[in-house]
Amino acid sequence: MDNLKVHHCKIVKEWAEANKDKIALYYLPSYSPEKNPDEYLNCDLKQGLFAKPAPRNVEKLKENLENYIALLQNNPVRLQKYFQHKDIQYAA
Image 1: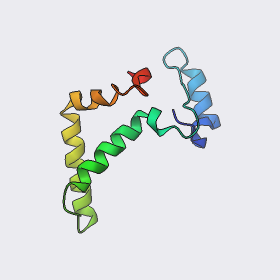
Image 2: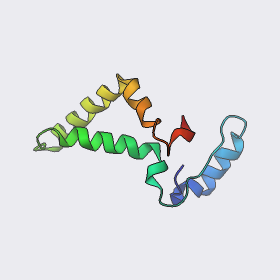
Image 3: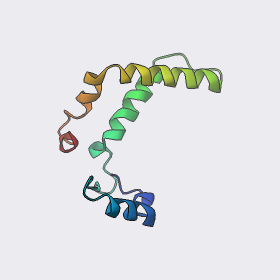
Image 4: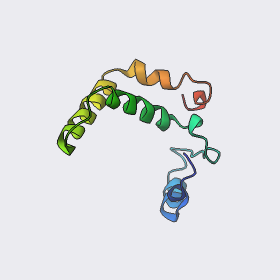
């Protein structure tokens, strides 16, 4: 996880402790987007959305977003490629 303040709050710590037999949390170094798999998704999504004409309203933006997410959901190989980058292989 990144070091967003909310990830260190009491409720997260309590949940992590209650579930430590199922999950281990690892925090990324401060400001290290290259090590955060979420950033690869964000980049892919932005490029995909910017490849289309700018939406004229919120509904069209939402439609474009949902369509792109559906494309990603149906293409697991594309998502797996995010984890081939040397900085996020730890998460694969």
